[in-house]
Amino acid sequence: MEIAQKDQDLARAPSMHPVTLRFGDRQLERRYHEARLPYRILANRISALAGSLAYLAFLTLDRFTIQDPSAALFTVSLAGIIGFALIFLATILVRPGRWIEPMGLVVIAGNALFLALYLMSLSATSHAYDPPSAVYTMAAVTCFALCGVTFIEGALLALYTIGIFLLVVTVLLPEPPLVIEYQWAWMALVVAFSAIGSYLLDRTQRISWLQRLDLAEARTQITILLHNVLPPSIAARKLNGENPIADDFPEASLLFADVVDFTRLSSRLSSTQVVSMLGALFGRFDQIAQRYGLEKIKTIGDCYMLAGGIPFSDPAHLDKLAAAALDMLAATRSVTTPDGAALTVRIGMNAGPVTAGVIGESKFIFDVWGDTVNVASRMESQGVEGQIRVTKFVRDALARAYDFEGPFRVDLKGKGQLDVWRLVAARTVGEAGWEATRGNLA
Image 1 (spheres, rainbow, N blue to C red):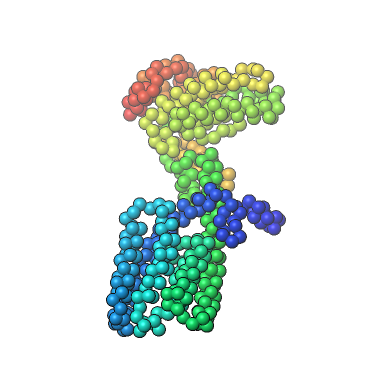
Image 2: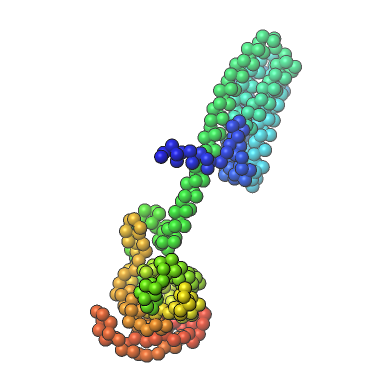
């Protein structure tokens, strides 16, 4: 089983060229370079600073030891110090961008030529202490490490540097053929080991980057799934490991909507038809909830539970929930049963203090508790089809913005005889109505 899974993972993995290590997908390759840009900027910055300090160190060492009489040596060393210092400042002052990649390559290639000028400026006294083989071996090795270059970039730069070395020891500062052969052998061996290390490092970095992409994608999928179950703010707290999650809301509003005669409907319809019918109805309810910025709590069979004022307080939560309830009644008229019969719902509303939080560790849900919730549920269960039943508190809070019928005397379980009202229609729409509601709620 594990072998089969590994084979599937390898089949899905993006292809890499066996030599250059470039991804077969050009867009993926571009994303990789963009992701490495901060690293290359830092690498260029450190390399430029190190180059300036290196020329300064050798110039200082010469002043206190050999004291090479060549005036050209001082000038070339000073130019190296200043040149690398300017490059260092450029990486800080110039706006970051993809220009840093070719700049790094040009700096390394230019330094190989500059080293030839450095060697030519040495007097005969210093040649024994600064042999071209040592200078260019170091230069070729650093081609793989400086400026955050990729393996193939480092390999090409190393070959170029070796070519400059051969030019120096055969034309500019000729050495005996046997000496050149030995120097070439040592340089080739050291560079080959450096190339192997660079190849493995570049390959590891690319694989690691792909794994980070997979982890980021997995986290995104987890977040999307959590947002389908929990409010985004609650999902973030859950992902951060907070447990338990429970908050008190002194002012919130609850709505229950239930399909009338659902048991009879489901007995004459197939399971697929029932699910399709509820999906069409609740899909419209979801759109309404989103439009008013309300929080869908859950569905229990044919019952739809909606809340206002959680998980964030909202002074207009009750007005928004009332407007949503009216829209839900209207939306129900556009949904029919598979056999063409009319579909109706009854809705109950209440408002007051509630507690909201996450229940469970596996298959967890965001839920709401409290007497306010229980009364809202009983408003629905004791309601009339095609109507919205509300408590006295809701009616009083919305009296200036909505029309009501009632009161009607009902017997609620656990509450006894209560007066309830029917929400009929909105008098005002939009912010004007919400402002009026804020005044009543206050």
